[in-house]
Length: 162
Image 1 (cartoon, rainbow, N blue to C red):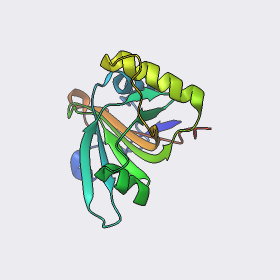
Image 2 (cartoon, helix red, strand yellow):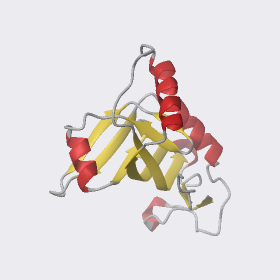
Image 3 (cartoon, rainbow, N blue to C red):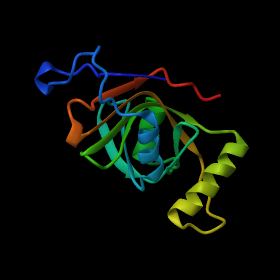
């Protein structure tokens, strides 16, 4: 994965692409993603109308795993368009992921997702959901308000899940 400056409007004062001092390190972003209780997911349906909603999920293996009712608006939108945006709640310690959705089928990963989910959200030992969805980032953005615009960072070239 590579990090660089995002291409934002000049009025934001983001440093030129060749000035990398102050970039947010990816391990810190993953710490935020792992620790987050809530994630916001934005989808767009076949009718081109956006939909945004908070979800619970777990960050594992470089992706966000979660579930949703197959009859929900977000499930219908993801069936029509597998690209979503996921972001954390904070507007001060920002993490935004541009992701491609898929359904997880690896039983070992699913077992790990359920075990992690149960611990994170204090769910009963038999708690499971279906399907298990996975949002894998293509691009990510992160910054902290105290260091903005010097901390504005774009991440690309994520390894594709196997």
